Length: 375
Ligand code: RB5
Image 1: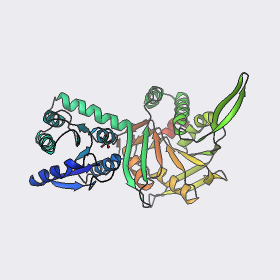
Image 2: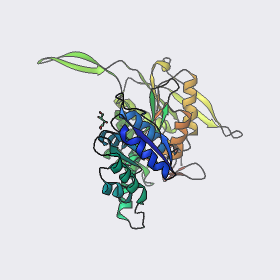
Image 3: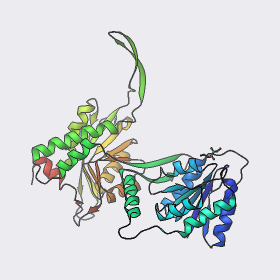
Image 4: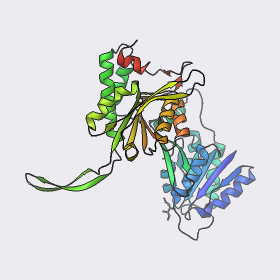
């Protein structure tokens, strides 16, 4: 077993006694610092190191220490897959294991002595999770894990330039209107006309969130009653690139909200010999590399064509790219994260599996055929 440990200056006093205790139990320890309490440091930095080690499976569990244990627990619980429990006594240590399957415990160096901290760690380690078949605790922890799936922050990567963190992000839209329309879209009895309208409406609703980070600038507007200090979008230029042909279904909806955006098109086919995607058509706005480009592809299955399309855009000097799809399979998300860690993915639903023909299951079938009535 490997335990990652991290502390700020406020929790430092507990760190070495806990490490000594763990080593006596032959537990391997990854010590992420801090290594003295002489300077004031920022606890989120240590939380990140410990959580990253757990997410990457370099460590099995973690212990985080600060003055109260509160800051590190709040920060740790922002990381997907982390269940951090703040413990102030031995009972909490025991129950955080048995009821919550906590994979991190957090303790406050200003609230307890080292002996108490070690007893809490010991109780946590020695109390297994109640994983029995009809366990109410198992059900509840499962419900917590579901929350992670709503907004998945993929692996956190350290950039080579040092210090700065980039997140690979997947946004799954949980808005009731989008969820409702996705259900109608999935239904095999939904006909072509309605299917087309739904794709367009969902795309329009998604455009609202996809453009959340557009920069604003201040303007003064004269109203009939006086001057309003207001804001407008700061001249940031957008472009949409549907991947032919199913991506076309999303263009109208996006343009309804962002009528000034330009539209490029990219077409790919799979080479029957190499099975690699080959570009057969690409027409982009002339100033595409000065724009934020949004790639549209309703179904992210293996991620092969979306990844290739993004690659072709990058080859043309485009650096700001987002990918918007309706349904994404986990395999596709992983592929994009691996090939293009700088590209955020927006989707309305995440499905688990692909079948042998690389269709998303349950998915909604072939989006192109359903949009254009070709089957
Ligand atoms: C640091 O002074 C202190 O704020 C920190 O250790 C922790 O208690 C925060 O929750």
